Length: 456
Image (cartoon, rainbow, N blue to C red; front, side, top):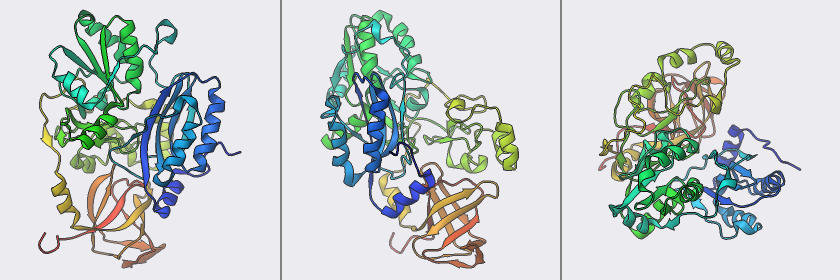
C-alpha cells in the first residue's frame, strides 16, 4: 500500500508537462470531529494519489485544511472522494483565480494538533457559535456602513500586497498573534460596532468569529469563502471590487492579482512592486518583495551577505548551513534589517502604481515565441538545462526566461551545448544547456524574442 510520494518534484513536473492536461488549483476546509486523524489521512492519500491529486493538507481531530492541485478532468472524481465523508458533503471548493499546472508537485498530508495554529483552547468557548457569513455584495454593503470595523486576519506579508479598503491590518507573522492584539484594540466597540472580518479562504475567520463572540462582541460577520470566493463572485456578478491589489496564496505562485493596483514596494529599492520571492540562499529563504531590477542585481537574494554565500562553492555553503535551522524554520517572512523599504502594518492610503493592463501584456506577448521549458539548474556552475519543444535555438539568439518566481529576464545566447556536445543550433526535441547568471525553476519557460510583427 503506497502512502508516500515516489517521484521528486522535478520528475512530477515533467510528467505533468508531458501529459499536457490542465490542472485546477483549489482549496477547502472543514471543521469536524475526526476520531482517528491518521486513519483519515491514510484513506485520503490512497484515494487522491490514484487521481494524481497533489497538494499540502493538514488533518487533525478538529477537521481538515487543504490547498491542492487536481487534474481538471478528475475534478468530479475528486469531489466524490470528499462526499464519502458526511461532514464534507456539498463542501465548497475555492478554485483559484489564476491557474498554474505546477502550483503543487507533491501530495503531502500531515496530521497536526490543529488545522490552523490559533493558540486557543477550544474547550473554553463554543467554536460552533460563528459569525454571520456574508456574500460579496453583502460584504461590500457592510463596508459602506460607518458603524463597521473591518479586520484582516491574515499576516503582514499577505496584507501588504492586497487588502480591503479601510481594513485594520495587524503587523503579525501568524494568526495566533493577531487574536489578542485585535481583542485589545477593539475593547471599546463590543456593543455598538459591526465587527467585519476576512481572510484568504475563510478558515481563520471560522474560528476567529466564534472567539470574538465569546469575548463579548455582539455583531460579528465574516466573508464567506474568504477573498478567493469573493473574487469569484465579483467577476461572475459584475460587482465592484473593494479589495485592492493581490491576494497572497500559499503555493509557488505566491499571489493572484485581483485588481491592477500595486499597494506595496520593493523591500530593497522602494520601487512600486508586489512580487514576493524567497531568498536564493538555502540557509535563509527569507520571503520578501523584490522588483525585477533588484532581482537581477541581487540574484534573488535579500542581502549582500546572502549574495556572497550563493557564490561560494556548494561544499562551503553546506558547511555554513550545518547545524542551522533551514527551510520553514528560518522563515522570518519579510522581517530583516537588510530590507530598508519594508512597511509592515503601515500600508499606503492610496495605491503606489498600477500593474500593466491586459492590453499591454498582450502586446508584449506577440514579441516572443515559446520554444522550450526548464528542466534543471546547476547552481554551482550556473548552468541552465532546457528541453526544446518548438522551433530552433541558435547562438546569438536573444531569449526570455519567464516564470512566476523568476519573473522575466532576458539574455543573449553566446554558447550552447546540445545533448551534451557543443553546437551552434538546437532543434525540437534537443536537450540544451547554457550559462545563466540567475537561478531558474521548473515552472520557467524559454522564449525566443525579437521585434514585434508588422502592424502590432
